[in-house]
Image (tube, rainbow, N blue to C red; front, side, top):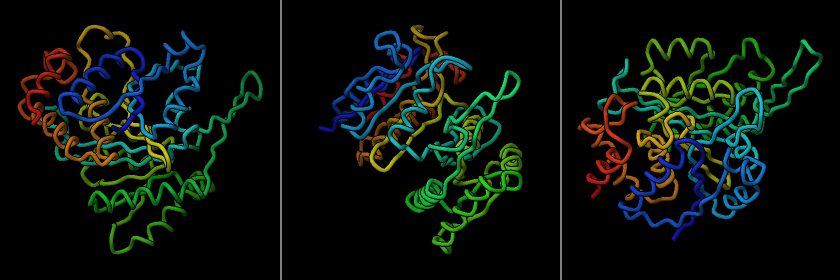
Length: 333
């Protein structure tokens, strides 16, 4: 039996985590869950949002499933997500944006995967206050990180039968930093000539093109900051963060997470939507090679959307969290 670290998080985190556990149990997924505390509750109990026990658990188990943790805006402790990525060198963020039936959106047949470099750029957190009126943040781009995320994007495209990789930068302005990222991805692209189509576009134009014709994009590879923004944008094209799965992959470890917030205002009301975390769990099962279980849960979830009768409020329905979960379980084989 495989042991997986489980972080239930804050706000609605414990509710949607328990919902996923129930689906996994009914699907006979053979996992031993190592439950760890992170986020606000960890601050209350341990004085830190990310206790060492959490890191050690993931290092031991290699894989984690994580519900959302609250991050203060503009003050307080640093994001648990950012800290995990740095500590475990989870260099590739993978975000899938694909339409689900009966979710009203402006576009159909959207199927985009955003591959985001996850460890450097402005997220390196190198900032300083020059004086009371001026602050400075340093953008870090390295050849090593850019080459490996470029290779990850093309390997992902090959493995998942995708046809095109698009590199997105602002290399016309950030000529050294984004220029280095673009140079590296171009070099990687040469190794895949004849196998994967390659093109590149500036970030501002990419955002415009995404809202004009998102179907022109397949796999997108970006530095950290642009990737953070674009991955949320693409999620918005298919129904929002409530349906968007997320994965953070490194050489040795992987953390799968719902990328939406902890929504403390609706915590405990039995109306939270567990889709994003459940789809992240499906990605986790695929990563683990548990493809039969992954497909069983995926097909059951998709059937609920296909029928469209039992959806949570954020998806345009009136179902409770429990009713939504029971509908998924009913469709399991």
